[in-house]
Amino acid sequence: MALTTLDPITALIVVDLQRGIFDSPSIPAAGDVVARASALAAAFRRHRLPVVLVNVDGGAPGRTERPRAGGPFPDGWADLIPELDRQPGDITVTKRTWGAFASTDLESQLRSREVTQVVIAGIATGTGVEATARQAYEAGFNVTLATDAMTDPRPEAHDYSTANVFPRLGESGSAQAIIELLATRSAQA
Image (tube, rainbow, N blue to C red):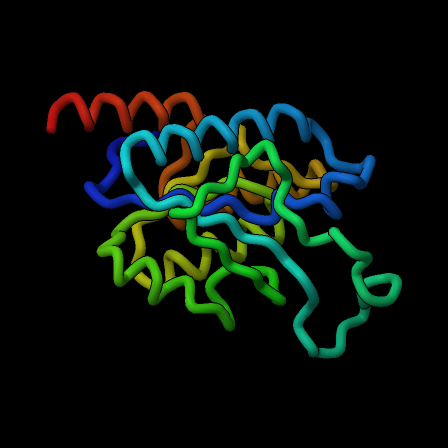
């Protein structure tokens, strides 16, 4: 589905753009993703719309067939990357699951600001971004995915999510199209 509209109070959610993940050499197009996510954050701030910066610092306690390798995360692993230009008014959420809504207060923070739509960007497309999009959709938010402001170390997971999952959860568009829609909407207000 093509990008059609943004609600009057739309929030940007940037998932897991943090030091420990970007220190990994297996992240494709990381520089482009960071630039686009940073541009989105700047645009949302210019339009006085909420910006949510999410990091992951742990994992869900359940048993899995593929547990995370290694022990505790090293110091600084969960630090948000400086390119996001974190501002005092930004909402920050630390999660310990794939999605940003489960076991956090993100939904209540968005509801208290009367947010009805979210734009999601970040990493990894097939896990953190997709889980956050699913949870947002299930919570009743309109969902928009900035598909060129996300990536996955598994290109096939990125492709599958963008082609098969995201069209069932909301609308998709480029970061630039979202920024232009924000500007157009503001000019009409």
